[in-house]
Image (cartoon, rainbow, N blue to C red; front, side, top):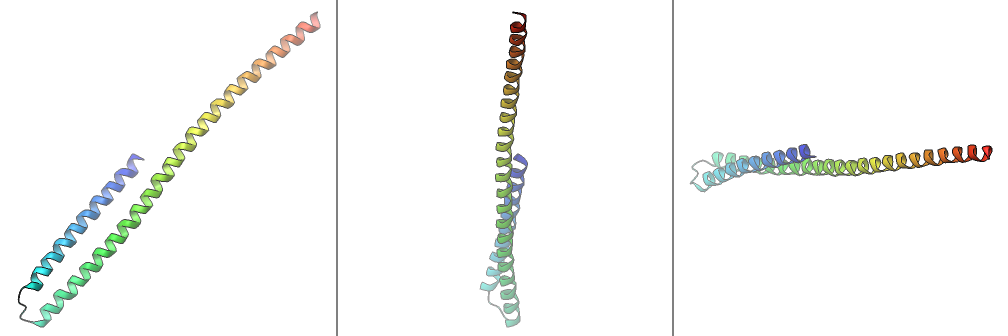
Length: 119
């Protein structure tokens, strides 16, 4: 479970770094767009690049959210598995206890039967 949490943290850190990088690129491009552009070709190229970066950022965010959801499901499945394992152990312990009691009762019954036959 700790490993899943660490994976989730690494994934969040990676996503945060990717978002920061994309934000820096967007800010840089916005600064470039604010400067007087002498050629409309340069302007169009920057605008296209800005749109591409925004789309890339959105795609990264969607992928991160999907990965986050999968990790959450894995964590929940691991928790459920731990609960089932604990319950399984409790049931095994209870079964062993009942078997012990049954053996004790059977032994007492056999002793009582022998005593009755001798009497």
